[in-house]
Amino acid sequence: MQSSLSEVLQRIDAALSAARDVFERFTAGAIEAEYKVGHDPVTEADRALDVVLKQHLLRPGEGWLSEESADNPDRLACERVWIVDPLDGTREFVQGIPEFCASIGYVVKGEAVAGGIYNPATKEKILGSLDSGVSYNGTPARPQSRRSLDSARILASRSEVKRGEWEQFKDAPFKTVPMGSVAYKLGLVAAGLADATFTLTPKHEWDVAGGVALVLSGRGFVRPTSNSFLRFNQEDPLLPGLIACGQELSTDLLTALSHPLQAARS
Image 1 (cartoon, rainbow, N blue to C red):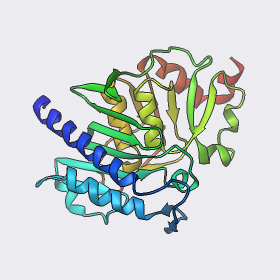
Image 2: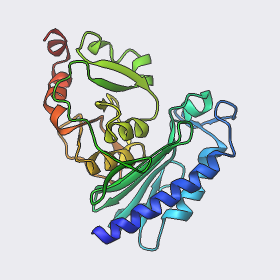
Image 3: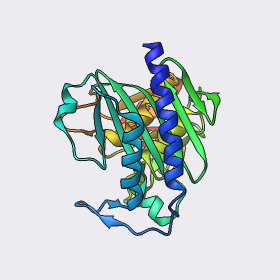
């Protein structure tokens, strides 16, 4: 798989460079948004990015699943599938908060094996595959090796914090950092710029495929909040909540999620 993933990673890199050019046509915080069913925003930038990413990534015989494309069930018969969120964190993009990115995941037989994200506001590009490991702006990187939650930096969903869902962790020993874009949060964990992230609410495959590929490429730990096995390119692309961190922190983090009040007292 090594040679094929090398070529795939080159495609991801080229696609993110093309996404950078698209982002330059728009100004975060100064763009109009429409709202889908469920009140999720969508902008002209989302649609333009979807077109460009598909042009750079998709090859014959590969499947495509994107938040901004009509779902084609033919992808279910494909062994190799691109799972893409052209603009993860559209709400932050509309508000001018620098926590959004283009996110690309490449899945083989249901497993996320390569991915990349690009945040144009911070000019961060994180790439990775199971063969190559992870790079952050061209420099090798990996998840943190912290073993304890004491003083750990945990990236939380900005919307979950706003809704009060993280109140159960207010006395926990870690520092909670609210942030938009789950793909961006996963990328930062993969690059060792945060200790962990988890989401308490379900996410779609396109939200997390790229970030999951990055964490796994760095030999990090990723698991659904349920005990189910994480598998992509499902008929229903909605996944349960997700946990991601370095391997060494996984035991403490799983304990904290299972018994948040006990973890806060310890």
